[in-house]
Amino acid sequence: MSNFDGLIKSLDPERVKLDEPLSTHTTLKIGGPADLFYEAHNSGELIKAVRLARSFEVPVTIIGGGSNILVSDKGVRGLVVKNCGGEMEVREKNIFGFKKHRNIAIDPRWVGSKMGTMRYDFSDLDYDESEYPDVEVAIDSGVNLQVAMFHLFDQEITGLQWYSRIPGTVGGAVFNNIHGGRHVFSEIVKYVVLLTKPGDVIKIPAKSMRFEYDSSRLHQSGEIVLEVVLSLRKGDVEKARSVAGEWRKRKSSQPFYSAGCVFKNISEKDREILGYPTTATGYIVEHILNMTGYKVGGAMISPDHHNFIVNTGGAKARDYLAIRDEIVKRAKETIGLALEDEIRYLGEFEDR
Image (cartoon, rainbow, N blue to C red; front, side, top):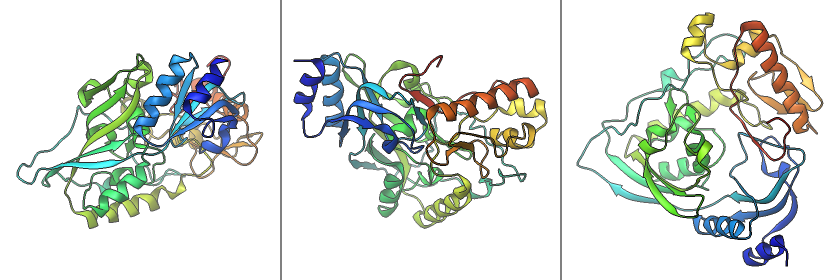
């Protein structure tokens, strides 16, 4: 019996798909096949799939909502596990103490602009919730972030409104330490439960996650998020709903059929040196590099948000990368700036 056959039999032959096109599981709608594909509906199934794959010496890759990733045209070898479910539990409602939970300050690299297609800003929607009681909520990593936000609103729990309209799972939000305007996800993370490479389950505090702008220790450690314990608020839910709705409206320029922002925003220091009105990389692509309408194959720089490369139909990963590489080249030649990738590459790429 081959390693693949043994793994399929151990997982459940009826739930493992062969040569599953990953284009159907990414927001960009690009990607070749996974040798084996399995959907984990809770943390227990995720742990089982990963441990079994490793025991059969089959490479294993975890995806969530499929945003912020570019999958190779050649696909991904081994087992791809889609983490797509789980539970939420309100564990504590501290109605006596009032404290502001906030981890080490991280610059979200957000300076709004009134120019071009990057006109939206969120500073007027920001407000302080520190007067409200803490609520501790445990959420499995495969839970969709937007589903979690609305479910918690129904329980009069706030704190996720800053991340309205951001696709993906709670685990992905931790992995990338996502940002929403002036907020980063690590502000509300209290603990993270991880599956280590050797297969152990550990619980660590947020301060040990090495959170940075669009990054965490998970980018290097190979650990997998199983559960996140968040410190949220028993806050003004109607205000939070209103802010979330306005947030979605202002972000409506962000296109579908994309992987999200291609590059990280530039630092405040670089913004000041270059004399630009915003830290948004989309401003550079649009106004400095003048790449509006740039297209390769089925991929194109979005005319609505120039830090997005969209799939206009039939785009391949190679088309996306051709545009990405041209932006990098022109930014280096024109303003001497080395742009940093915000997306992650999965599968077989040359020189990546």
